[in-house]
Length: 200
Image: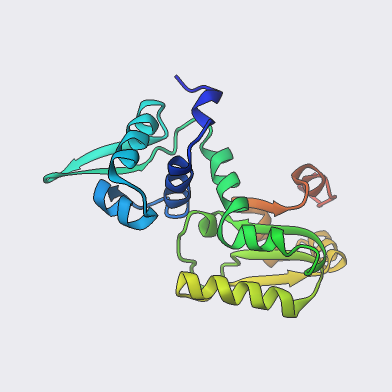
């Protein structure tokens, strides 16, 4: 049974959450996990068993190895995915550097980016809205790109331009709004209630 006490977590479980939620389509076996998160194998096994027990992970036998993967039907799946996106990797760096970045109203990550999936051509992975110090943002993005080993597709818009393009139902902006996303900076309620013809 899912319960809030499931979320009372250890350091090892935090590392496991970061690993699985930044590679949501991947499956891992125990020794592979220990190498990736640099934790003792017995501690990893204990946490994997607990996470299987309350339903966050599923396991699958392949040959002589037992593989683990996320269970997307877990009750708090979406909330945990948002938490990991905000507190690790690029999300963490952007939040830490918010003052240096200027007047940032909203930062949105696409669902694909949060799940660790490669974008298709034309996908915007990161949308930043506000009066942004581009030099600071470029530096943060570049560091994240080096860690990922690929380019990150990002766009910066002023709040005025974003609102204007919404009122014109600009295809670029509409596509972003209609796709799954995670709000890294900004209030989702106020963002959702900004007037968009046909969406309010």
